[in-house]
Length: 401
Image 1 (tube, rainbow, N blue to C red):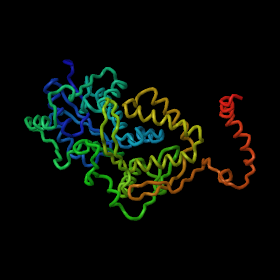
Image 2 (tube, one colour):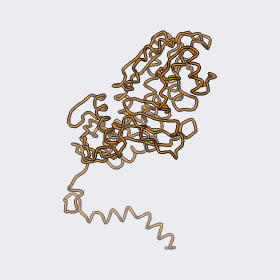
Image 3 (spheres, rainbow, N blue to C red):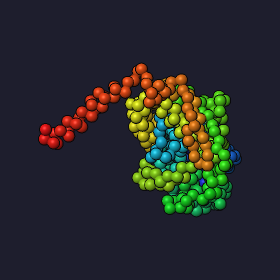
Image 4 (cartoon, rainbow, N blue to C red):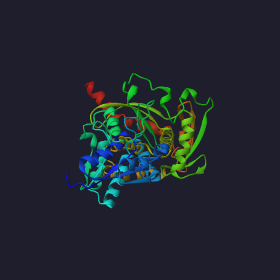
């Protein structure tokens, strides 16, 4: 990589990427340009520009990508009903391809020969970043400092930074590794590494512990158009505003805590605790509307698609032909997923409290035990005889008849 003169670094302002700036300059003799994706990190973005420049970056880009993140990455995954291993709502997973997209874009605009990231050699993010870059621009070189440098621990990184006069924010009272965006906040490490440990009450930053949530339930109404949430409590809102409001409401009611020992792509299990208040409500509400508007065969097949879709997103294969093909199927299923779902939030629980849709397939006349001219109870006799015929034939065979 001796021909590398300019690198675009995915910069978060944390310890690893702060150290990566001088490390890249010292080891490659290159110019370092930083890129920060504003995905809803909030106060974590404060002071990033100054810190990056002080650490040796020649330039820094900070792009507000919240709307694009929700509309082009989160909502397609929501429409697919994709949940990894039954729990994880993919908050970190679908953020990485968007970051990679802009890494490539800036590298091309700046004439950089390489991009770099601060993901460790044990995690999934290294795969997500690098596979996405390869899919978007196979000519760019990729530098992963954690797989190259002699830094082996947090203490090593702090010493490296101190020796070069680089200030990095270190929260001594919070020893966890976190990732935050508008969809979720993840916590890993420290005492959470033992699955036997219950997460401490002071872990949560977005969600009120359920036992401390209000003693009265809160109701919210989500309006969907073709599978996409467009209104909250009757008010049409842009995606960012809708999710920010829903995060506050659901978080206050203790909704959205996810504790999972998951199977990482790289072959090991890891324990993560996720806060996903608004996302939990949207996922459950969307599923309720599909129960109302999708026929049995489509709904059941879509559950198979949802699992595969979740694996693709988790594995970093967002820019794959299969994910794009599955999107076409999902989009076809969502044409009638329009309506309003009412959800009841109470001390960590989120349960449906009614749903309506102009495309509802539920017909009270069919469902009632009373008489209805399009369905005669006697019709069931012939249906059951034919439906059970293979089992009857097999039983007769076993009896020797």
